[in-house]
Length: 480
Image 1 (spheres, one colour):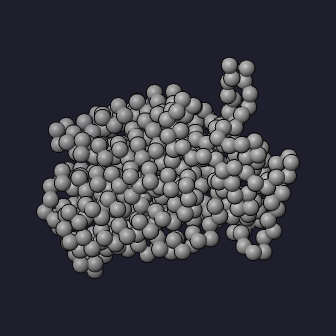
Image 2 (image 1 turned 45 degrees about the horizontal axis):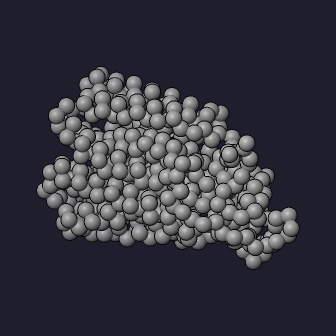
Image 3 (image 1 turned 135 degrees about the vertical axis):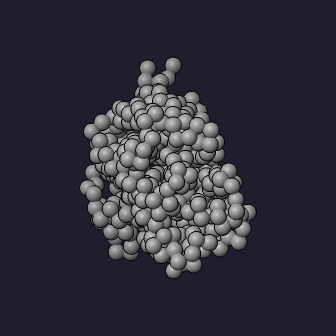
């Protein structure tokens, strides 16, 4: 026999979670929804610029400190170690203290690390600074995804989360080479020449992030998170703000009775947070498939982003040419993210993932076997970036739908943190493969990673058109 049951809370909270889900779906998109999306995107956009800057400044950093490509790859790996640590810590913090609190904390950590990068006097300090930057970046991405997922109506949820990657991964990946070309090439002499300009590349990114940090003081908290913590008034305050189209203040009337259960009681028992729940029988399949797919796709993507300028310079391109080529390839990133944001409304998550992974595999093989001229490198590189962003954007939409509210922050952060592990392992390995087998060997390896992604997506759990509660807390539970 089966029944519809909500796990992890008492009957009052169970009833209120379903009522809240209905309320969120009834609210039309307002200025508060859009403002929150824009604030999250703004933070992520500058995060992407910062994370891309390391690879784009690679040749100048290598020359400044007199290090080898392998040593530079270790700096990259240190950043991604930080990304993994930050993802796990940020997710835990968001489930304990709130999505908004975690976002602000991550930005502070990232800003401190960015300043230290710009001022690093030697190779060792730069490595440590990149670890700090990575910790801030890792938490920022995972928590922002969870927040947007929880405030959006089911109908628009996937597109809203996908829009985060359009504005950050898609647009950010296109702007990053242009930004690097401006600072390192066009204004390179103004900023002190090759030995100094790369420091400004990192330092200038602190200014807009500080502005975002101030603006985020006016961001609403997730009503779903507040309700699971027993804060009915806070949940209603956020719901009212979403419906009214403005951030909550003293003038907004809070209708606490909207979330009362049937007997009118206004007190609920907060849900217990057991972070290990994502590894239990009910969730471990979701955790494993999403984490494995993200590992493969992001490791391939970031290996290319981090090492492509160095690859191109090794082929004889100037730094300016390598940045221009990278910029052209990144147009594929923006188009891939836009495509994902459009088709997730119509197609099942698994369908998009499997199709994108198979096509990405074919592009990788084509890149490895055929891309022996600059035009072919640009074509295949753009297509490769298209499919990587199609896949990562879809995964961004899918991952938060796989976990209940009480552990959603940690669940999403674990998926993204596992991807970070792939980024730690793969760039040094890809650099070694490049030395031994050139670009053909690199992209053949990446094609294999995409094939594995397709298999993992086939084993995933479909969540399209389900509310977060239907996909998680209120899914069928079988009793003996």
